[in-house]
Length: 132
Length: 140
Image 1 (cartoon, rainbow over the protein chains, first blue to last red):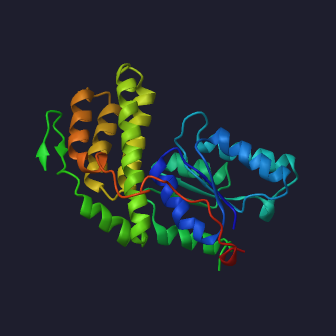
Image 2 (cartoon, rainbow over the protein chains, first blue to last red):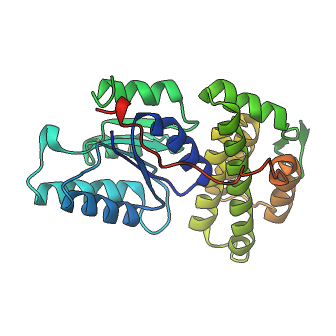
């Protein structure tokens, strides 16, 4: 499983990276813009990410905008349905507006609120079929 | 827990052993990983609080203030410091409602209460950060 962790906070990046590196390679980006660059590069190299863990409130470009841009990028490349990247939002924002936006417009697979819950995170990844 | 000048409950000081237990029990980390998380917590807090000075020069910039307190709240939640996260959430709410906050006092309270982790310097290599290693056997 190849994962991209998009987080502006160092502890959250460390935690996610430690928990997920057990299942494969983890790359990190500190904002949405940096994430999109990494995602595009991975597509170009024909080695896309299996999973993206995406924070919402970040400088430069927030997670919601990055998610919409990711879906546009995938559409331009003819990717749809099961071929699109699995995205789990990991954020301290728990209002319904943001949750609905991430699911409806961004087509995210899961939405986790901080504090990060190891069991829920691994459970979602397992449900997505990314790990056994 | 005490009541501060802002009328908000101020949590008791952070205890390093409790923080260690949190990382051990909540995330099932080993001792080396725990040390890395303590160093990461210290670094994250230091970074957040150092940016506070800059933000507080322009207390009218509500968007930056909200982002600052929101980020701090998320960090404290991941550290298992729910009482401190609740304190920050109360400030966030007060800010959203247009209330006045003595930010310098708040930052002083946070620095004082979280002093033990802020001054944490760990063992050798504790601030080496996280790995980006591969364990392909377990990936699909």
